[in-house]
Amino acid sequence: MIGIVILGSFIAIIIVAFASIVEKRLADSIVLSMGVGLGSVVLFFIFQAPDVALTEAVIGAGISSVIFLMALKHLKASR
Image 1 (tube, one colour):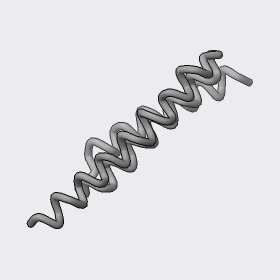
Image 2 (cartoon, one colour):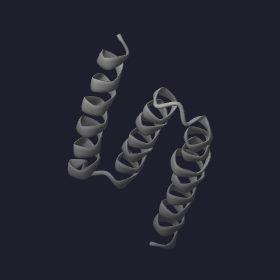
Image 3 (cartoon, one colour):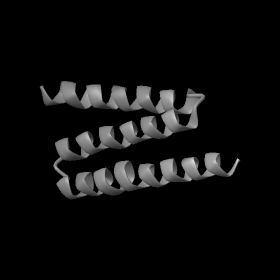
Image 4 (tube, helix red, strand yellow):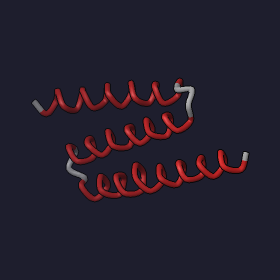
């Protein structure tokens, strides 16, 4: 059962990463990259690395995505 979850997570990460690359709108691409980070959180937790999973969730998927979205908003405001 765990093998199916691992395989599904890998496939989902690959699909979401590809969608993030080909997305036209930058904000949607940032949100999709957050999905890649959250998928890796699931894998880290399954592989029994909860400290790495928590760090990835907070920094990788959370704070960096918020900073990217704030920078995008600032760039749009300056145009």
